[in-house]
Image 1 (cartoon, rainbow, N blue to C red):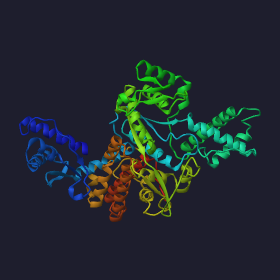
Image 2 (image 1 turned 90 degrees about the vertical axis):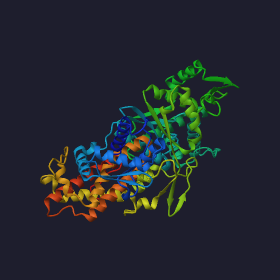
Image 3 (image 1 turned 180 degrees about the horizontal axis):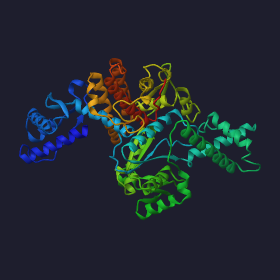
Image 4 (image 1 turned 60 degrees about the vertical axis):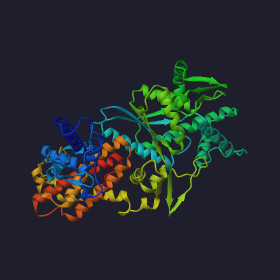
Length: 564
């Protein structure tokens, strides 16, 4: 509907220009928004104010002209159009349009909200990508569920979307992992070792060390260097396998690709990128180190690719990895990073430009910190020290649906307090329970209606494309019925807006708004009654709500329960 109004106004501006009512100019940017308060209509626009700046006319005068032309062109679209304040146009949708919208939902079912704005462009969403040095923590859940939800939204809007997990299986952190396991294995055999504070402290390290000994991974007479390497490889393989199993089976996050950092070196891609940088004069040697000319591309300084001791930095892998992804044909790469990577953004933008790509080819979403709150107090955590809450424990405690919803409720660039006490209660105070109860209530009504055993409301088949006649909806005229239909019709706009700005918390808010509209309708309007035609009309509204609510929950990866 927003697009219809925007297109209608733009066409009227062009028409007025042709008639001489307005001077020639490019139509300005203006907004069509859904007002917070019902008294301001279903949609509102500031276009008259924008045009006033250009034409030097009074906003109210322009608003009156637009209102008249809109009614002449689309009389059935709006019940009325008000002019408010300094020149805002407030649109109130007609009942006919609401009935048409309801019919469209019932016809399209799971395809309702499916858009084609992506034009099959190829997008990669790379998220979580935690160092494989231990179990995934609660903090990893934020990027995990935001990334998964975003990928669902992008797919819904016509993008060819792939989920990818980048495995950081080389570098300083995995070397520490190997040393940590090796030293714990020595301790298990009764040896006294000096265990540095910077090494990994968790009990999971001891468990891996015991497994190393049990399986006789180290053997006799092996050097310490080789023993650490064997411990590293064993621990990496085990942790990566457990991570894959957990994400796939318990967190229900399905990755299309698991990409190994080490593979960039094994396949020769790192050597290839080094030649590319040298040939294009993007790198140079100084003080024994190899540098990337990032300052040439808006970075504050050049960055080291290979240290003077010959050790590659993370930047070298990142250069090769980004080049690899672009060569796989992605139009856009979206990275979800932890807040601690904030300082890395500028150099990565420079990296993208240095490789000859545009900033539009890369997007970064930062995941701010998550704090677990219990009994009103924050629980302090540290992965390296082994004091942390695993994502698996959290899901076991509150359930996957609750974990997903809570992580998606707040904008990812703001801190999140995960209220464990609220997450575990089954009342309307818990937003997940509140939304899912709407689903359970809908299923209960449909079951009582005996729809599968008799003719479905307004014709059609429940489990196929549901056809309906708008004339059947004329009996729907209660304010709560109109309010619910309007919420249902918003779904495609919610999907599109999220695909454009990646603010997935919008979907959780919409789910709550939709649940509220349904619960209010249910309270005010009796669905099953002796009036057969009214019952059928309201059952059609119930079915439409079931469709849209499930489509909304599907985007978040949350179930739509039949019973609670």
